[in-house]
Image 1 (cartoon, one colour):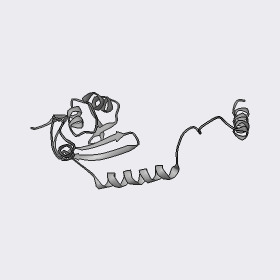
Image 2 (tube, rainbow, N blue to C red):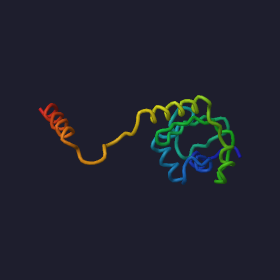
Image 3 (tube, rainbow, N blue to C red):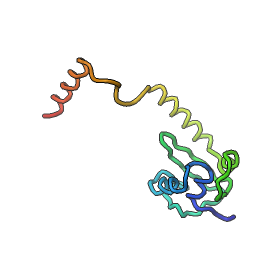
Image 4 (spheres, rainbow, N blue to C red):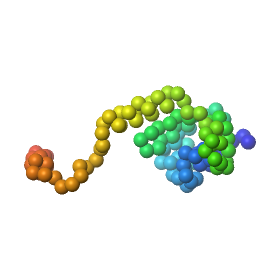
Length: 127
């Protein structure tokens, strides 16, 4: 096999649940091949580098095997090798996210102090 479509390979390597999701990710710029944007029909060959962004994580992997069929997870893991730099960067980012604490809207209604801060913010920024 000389090459496999990028969307098929990403699906077979179990980065995405369906080929449709792999295609959407490629078209959305979440997958880069050798540093540049690509198309779902791009033929991947052994030795190419892919940068794949999924949620908070970004992985840099090298294609070491080709397959256009989805198999078990152990077979899929043999299709690529993640770079050591990518692994270390993801671990550092994960620890930073954990240290930052939960992000989002506080639970429940605002109390009296929160309401005063909201009103103060509105008054200062609605001129």
